[in-house]
Length: 115
Ligand SMILES: [Zn+2]
Image (cartoon, rainbow, N blue to C red; front, top):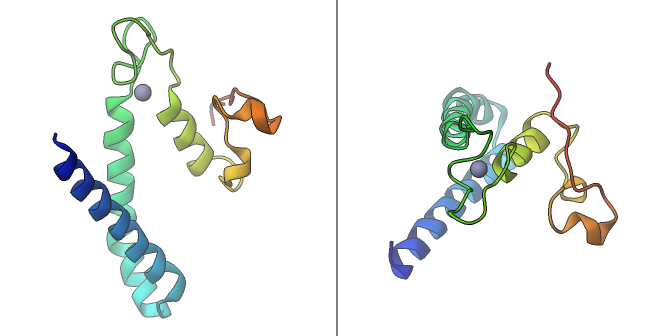
């Protein structure tokens, strides 16, 4: 994918997310109900597709995040972000884990618990 196409794709996705945020926070109740009817299914489908691509292989590694020289153990960052936003209390940026967590003093590992 060339840079122009990648930029166009990124802008389109961010514009769609901005549009949905605006509707979710500023629209009337009827519009928000209609939005929930259509968009929640689309968003859950998108999450399922994304998570399926990041399912661990037989060796417990993410096939999408692993490179030839650097295998990534499951859960990868996609699964950790999904857990943070879909399961954790509020998914606030302050609760993010990962390579920048050390700078904030927050734990670098998120524990996934069976529900
Ligand atoms: Zn992954």
